[in-house]
Length: 341
Ligand code: CUA
Image (cartoon, rainbow, N blue to C red):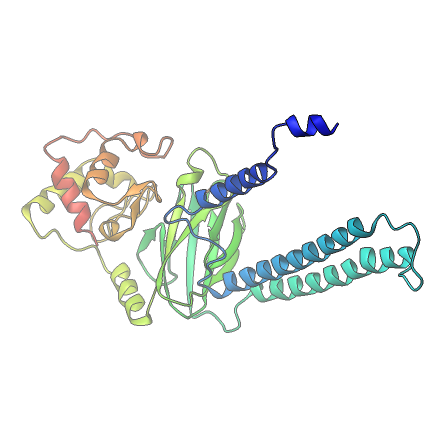
């Protein structure tokens, strides 16, 4: 036996543990891609509450783990002692208290805190000063402000530090409105108006995502919440309410003509022109938006051209068919759309 032990290759017990930890770390780091928001990096009142609850659960779990491991170590260290010492804890009472009583009290407390947080998430402490109407489409978000004529898409501007009511509708299937850094999810249900609210603590752009599988392009149903100081927000809203700017150059003028005479105007609105289509997003401020196709591609001239000619190669299944645009007219069309801001 001794001889065999000497000739056996030495086992390295640390290696499997290191591998497991390494793989775990890789999985964690894979989540750290740029632009991927985390609920544990809250920037809004609602998300901060949820993050606080998460840390509470984590703290309790860690404490329970440490206590159980300590007891296990103690039990293993002393397991060979044949006799109970005088004055030792009665094992049945120990199991009842530590195995049932303590978890019951802890879970009850957590349940209480959860109910309190749930109630607090229901509505903001002060009445919202701004309301936004958000409508889910396959696969983009229509954004309107009651009393304001214009509309935008996949971009929700809000004043920072103020609670904002968000009314949610869907025109087709189930979607879910989720801004991880600001607020937990709210599902959009056909035939119902759901409500949630947002309150951003600091200015910035916060990525939102449809969180309910809604078909082929569910992953490309992103949006941004832009939290800005009140004056900036008011200026932005005033711009949204105004007609689109008139073309300022010959190229833009030719582009506008191509837009209005082609098929674009049948599905899109550009306020102040004869384009009043409502199938696709309102394009009156398209030039200023953060992306094309609800986060599918960046909003720049190249991607815009590609999108116009055949958006099916970018976002297969979306409602816009390939467009028979004359190659010579395409740069003008791009110039015109980029001027709408
Ligand atoms: Cu809309 Cu997923």
